[in-house]
Image 1 (cartoon, rainbow, N blue to C red):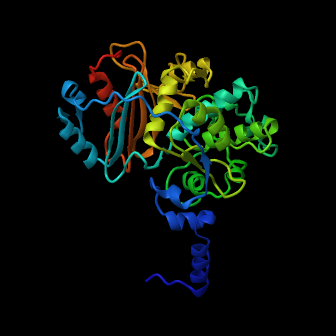
Image 2: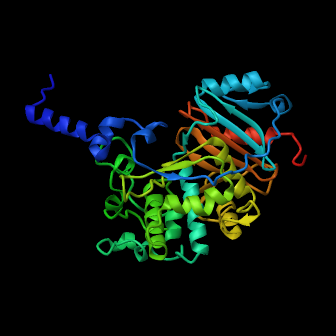
Image 3: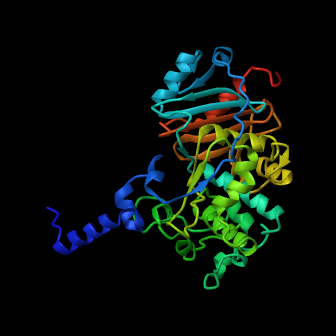
Length: 391
């Protein structure tokens, strides 16, 4: 029988009282990763512009009967079948834009348009856009080593990794997965001091050689971006930069949030911490479909967007068996087409999926992935889509 000493019991009480203010406290309080855990963590607002215009509506309810597709081992041919499938597979939102117009919007399992949705690793694609903007602003240069921006004098191997290698997830950093509290995965997610954690990371293979979709690289990239920004714009945060350079000029209709590691001077959790409404996430996908332009302005450099969503050179370590990863975006090759689809990819099946040929942006959000390959499902929907690209 397990015996708990008075000292151990007292220590657990102290940790419980500390709650979400410490690493171990967060592990014990939050326990497992969850789409609602942002409610228990410090956040920083990203405000929408006053009077933002809603998306132009071209709602249609019958596209599924014209464009049936396979999902979960069955063929879906009606709105009722689509809704039943989404509801039973933990989906919370499905939004479809075509030509920048809202053609379908559905919510499930108690969620509504006004619900906030945690995007998990889709946050990395937003970080990528911020880095591209910062480079065009002369704030940083992605070809430079991270040590030019982050204090890593005691860690020369990490300091030599370039920002570009961090964005491509070919940094060579050690990243151990699992729930053991000494491993990098839980430490990264639950830490209350991201900057201190990042100053201790280790290189285990030469940078630039092996792709791994780990979480430390985007966090280190965000740390470098933050440090570069405050040199030029004192007191700038990633949340404020998001608000001023993307969220408001893009025309987002609703406020959003960045989860930060601790209150006050905390760093945005760029690997998983962006929280927003589904329709505004669709706007972000539309921004990339439109080569970085929105509201008549070039927000993200066109060349940055193009490089992010096009296939890298042959023999690149970021090529996968059916597509690629580049600058914190994913691409999927489609049979019979030369232009790949691209998508932002998050835990629990969060997706912003873009089909450039059909001018489609699909957003699927959920409480869980429910064992479904949501990238494949989004691809099948876009392939089956038959509504004309102009109307």
